[in-house]
Amino acid sequence: MKSIQFANGDQMPILGLGTWKSAPGKVYKAVKEALQLGYRHIDCAPIYGNEAEIGQALSDSFAEGVTTREQLWITSKLWNNSHAPENVQPAIEKSLADLQIDSLDLYLIHWPVAFRSEVLFHNSAKDLIGLNELPIATTWSAMENLVDKGLCNHIGVSNFSVPKLKELLGTANIKPEMNQIELHPYLQQPAMLEFCNSNSIHLTAYAPLGSSDRPAPLKSEDEPILLEDPTIIKMAANHAISPAQLLISWAIHRNSVVIPKSVNPDRLKQNLGSAAISLSQEDMEQIAELNRNRRYVSGDFWVVEGGPYSLANLWDE
Image (cartoon, rainbow, N blue to C red; front, side):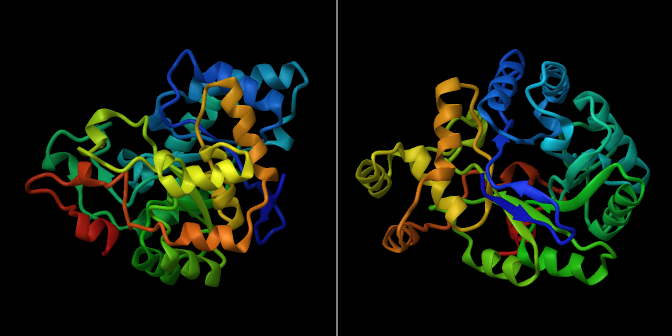
């Protein structure tokens, strides 16, 4: 399995198991199966509502000798209601307790969006806190303390724009080492890729298959289905692979970490096999032409009347 390397020499497997939308009662078996197959990278977040079940799968897999904690890369994320400095450490400690581990390999600020601490998900503008009131730099300083205390080895962000990364780089003592963002052939984000490559920030691609199984409220009418794109289907057939495998391989060929989600044993195996697929320069050039700047996870759920967030100030586009 190909890995990406951090400045201190730590190796992160380039292909991991995503757990967003993995339902309770299914994610335990999925993680157990993934580890048996050879996955050594699990991507988690408390808002997914399944970290405790993942933790049990990890603990049981360790006890059964399938793998060891030292062989795994585990990522989790700081939810929006824990951006206040006094809430950052309790948040990671809750994730660590649920996951039944002593430290994370990587901890990310999940969104550049802040909530009141008593709110899990906002209902109105009063539940939201603007970044002028609670700046990312303030939250980041508390994230840096987690590294100093050994609660995580690396810190980064998720859903950050290039301007937000630039601003954070200007104030951080520990530079962000990862930005986890939506990346796939319909949303290729070449400017982000170039900026992160130039600033030693790795990228993780979420929704790499187009996230067609995301909740209905997050979908729009008549949205394009990435897995049914004619170019993707034809190219996959030419390589005798599935469209999903082609999309995962494309992400890996761009040297971005990729975290497809599945709870199906056959698909877990197929996804893992994507790491061994070779695409030509011609393949990559054809896929480059598919870019539509099309977000499936638009972020419009953070936009409420009277609130501090808009799509313009979320993505800085």
